[in-house]
Structures are given as structure tokens and as C-alpha cells.
Length: 148
Image: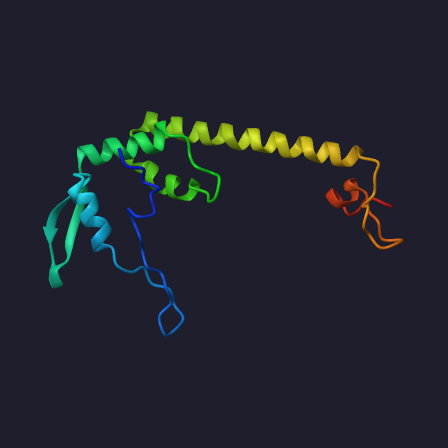
């Protein structure tokens, strides 16, 4: 099974034109790869050789596996926006499970950040390399309104 995050799978060119505006570029290559993998199929033809694609059952299964079963890769970029955009393609129960998994992740991250904030507020050491008279404690970094 191919990883949908594989950059080779969808290499869209978004270089700015002469007017400085970014436009999504060539998509025929990636769509041809998806079609060859039986993940999408052509369901119509239009003007200027345009094609209309639809997701196949195997494509829907692959999408479901990626959205519902695979843990998101949050190491270099957030997939949350893409996942949120694609979740309407899921059945309601799978969509709910995906939202609950993402919310649990956010709750864990928030708890970790709140723990760091609590530690910073109780840390006694001011900044080691601050100019004289300008040193601030970690608590003052978290809440600049605190008196020195």
C-alpha cells in the first residue's frame, strides 16, 4: 500500500507566475498515478480534453485506512487541515472516530503545555544571559504582566 503522504504521489507545482500569484500546477501526472493504482477513475470528459474523476471503492478504502487507521504524521507538517477536508468522504462513525482521535491528541498536547507553563511559573532562576536589570524569570516569559 502506498503512503498518501508520499511527495512523489502528488507533486504539485505552485511556483508564482509573473504576476506573483501562486497557481496550482500540473495535476494530470498525479491523477494518472492514482488512476493506474485504481484509486480513482475517469467518469466524464469535458472541453479541452478535461476529465472528471471519481474515487473508486479501493480508493475509498485506501482513504479510509489513511484517515481512520493510520496515525497522522505530525513530525514536519500538520496533516490536520487535509484530514479535516477529506473526512466528509467517510461514514459518520469513522468521521467521529477520526475527530475523537485528533481531539485526544490535542488534549494530550494541551496538558503537556499546561504542565510546562506550571513548571515555568515556579522556576526560581532568571535568564542567565539577559542584560543587567532586564533579566526575567520563566514565569514572566509566560505572563509578562508579572512584576520582576
